Image 1: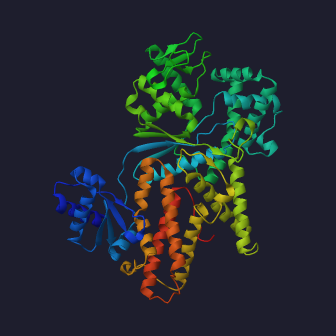
Image 2: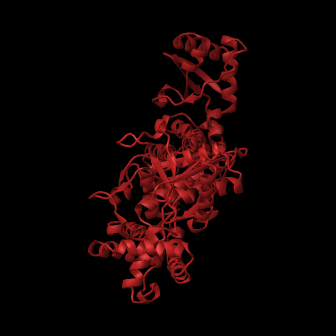
Image 3: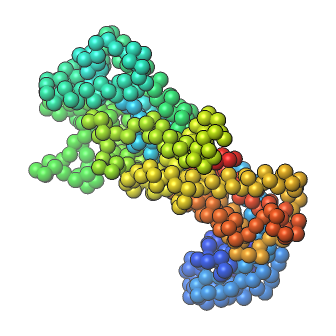
Length: 581
């Protein structure tokens, strides 16, 4: 809509003087009958020091005084100016919006997401993390950023030693191969077993801590067993990530980066940034202004190395952040981590600034997200009360497969084809359901609701795509060619104009979602586009309607643009499409 923006800019110059260069952002009227787009005059009025309604009236008169082939009519409504566009200009722009021009490189961003522990399989909480991280990465890339998708695997620490200790004591030499279990499920079973056994024998806690000391000391036996058990888990992670479409450009291991963090802490101690406590641990005094004080009024301290010399989470995050900024020349580092870690990232940035790394500490952003709740509350890995990611996708695919078989008949489709379609639909329903809420909101996952073909769901949008694919396939069978269709024939009804409006907003909504790191903004627009298509489809026939052939071609061209936008939009959200559902 560059031509429209030029007309608005020219009208502002005519109405208020050539020195006024601000062009208000186009908005969407509450109803398409008011116009295709609207201009809010509040910001312009503030710059001019005038009443917004007077500015709207003057701008309307200026726009109507020199109407071109783009704008048909401007109407002032209070502090807004509604704009009615010429049919040809509106739909030509809408069609071309399905092929966005490349955006210049705007910087280098690393998005770290998923970041699992090697003591348990991925669960529903990890799936929300992965969906959010992958969609955010895609939208940033679409908006012109170079994106490095990164994963930090938490492969060391006391929690890893707990599953290791449980296997040592109760495993009797069994392996994933001997039990037929997926490797991450196998190790996760022993993490749960540890928790059960520690409740009966509290001394296990000290034994696990001893294993951690031996591991950090390089004990050959413990390191070898640790590597073996981690390899079992990695194989399971790879299989799950492949099914969910989570991929990474860079994978860091905490077992590597924590050593960097320890050296940073030791250097900070020498420089007086950190202090050694009475018990021998190394701590960072937290600012009372920023973090408050303890109940007795004493300053709070952040432990960086325990008294036995072992490190904590913040230690390895210091090393990881330092390594990433030095190695990759990042403009921004985004951590997709649950909301319970807000305090952790606040303290991490405070430590980095105290160390003299403030120039990039502020470039670290914590993309916080809320918990995913089950019908009976919060997931607890140590108690085994989780929705396993593999089981979740299997279950959703089974439900989708049943629906497909009921629709087509069990004999009309091969079982393999039913399973292929069901996986795409099941995965789309999960991702859409987990992304449609703002990141900070808690989600109560509802499998049945997420698989519905009605309402704001993934299958609803996938079905809109498939329905268009069916129409276009029939048109090709009838030898209809819409490549040279006349867009000026469209726009005689509100349903077509609403589709054009949604197509024109596609990239703007993608940019808004990228800027706010909130894929839900874009997901809502993809849904609005699918809904606008269904409104058009139920009120207007495309093929076999008796309308003239040229109008049919124009409508086919419009649907082709909608189909492409739906595929692109769902793809940015990590959701696949099917030509036939």
